[in-house]
Length: 78
Image 1: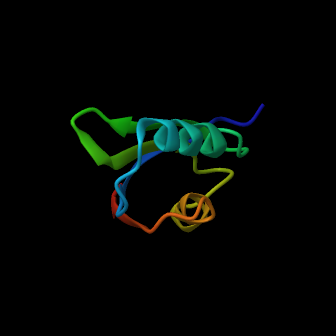
Image 2: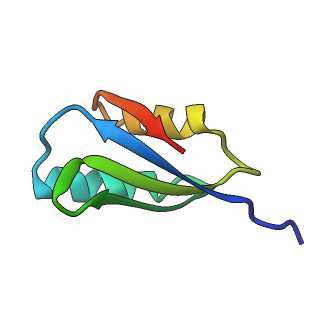
């Protein structure tokens, strides 16, 4: 069995999203193979924490998944 190499990234979402839009974005991201958890930071609704398996994805792919949801975003930390 392959070991999981879990990495957490911080992504800044430029738009001000409603609670419903944030929930939809999180749900859609978590459907991707390799994304283990996605969440917005309480009190800082522009920041997302995304845990993913680095054996399956890289940071560019994770950021690409966020942008596929029609939001402008940047990677700001690993």
